[in-house]
Length: 427
Image (tube, rainbow, N blue to C red; front, side):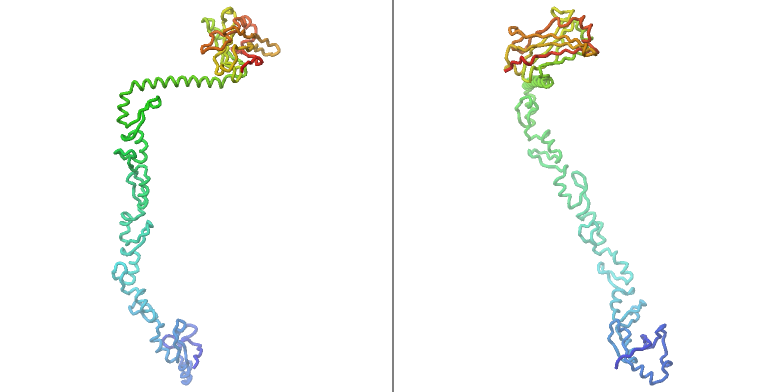
């Protein structure tokens, strides 16, 4: 017989219910004919839990008896928690979800009611949890603080040498590089200086290392241990003094050579010198007050590798021009290339005193020149000590003439000394 479709639903007690409000309906009132009732009760229906998976189907009159055993039908919880639970889920409910169930914690073994167990879970001290420092270890919850403080590989610990804090698993690697960690002396002395003090130890304190004498730059060749160095210093004071004196003499010669090199760099090598004589009034007063006051010019050269020259002035005169004229001379100084030059000196030399008139067309310079006499000793190759006077003009310009023109202006005088380049005879 094929199950029939009904306008009314059947509840768990086998009663018809209204499709509108699910209230029970007395089918005897709907079908007063006993034959109709018999026909309905004999109709084949499905279990009301058909959608939940129950495969039962039979006459309607047998539905109530079936529901008393249907595993999908809900009944009161056996533990009397008040919940309606399908028979098929009752065991799981009683074991896992019933608030009145009794169960043991899987970590500590204590027995709890269902609701108390749920509160207990997540707080049980025996439950293994991962370390909060993410070291990867799992420890019981009650031991986490002890683990973090004493055993965790990610806990911070201070380096025993420098005091800086590192994780436990990296502090050993740091110790191999720590600047304050003691290291053995490579000279195998008994000391163990900190790594950053090793160089100072080897340089200043190591008793086993070889050290040089403090006077090594002066020429002392002693080399030995520090105790031996102390004895050497006490016994060699006189020797060291001699070495220092010799060193000072060498350095003095080097300084002279450097001064000469600096002077050559700043000296003119064009064969001409324009000499600016400043503080003329004060210098003239000094020359009149003292005998033989001589002013010397910067040195200059006839060419890059030529003769070395220097001019000199006697503002109050010299020789025949004393007290009445200004005297001017040229000196030949010992030069660096004298061995390559021809002697005697044969350049034409001229002196020009510039008139500093505000109108160049009205300027009247004073010019004197001479051609060297090859027989004069002044023009021979100079010795280390050049001639004190040189050669020139004792009566170059009178004091009266100096007052008439603008040879001195703003307390400054300009004198040019020039060597004729056409007379260069250097080899």
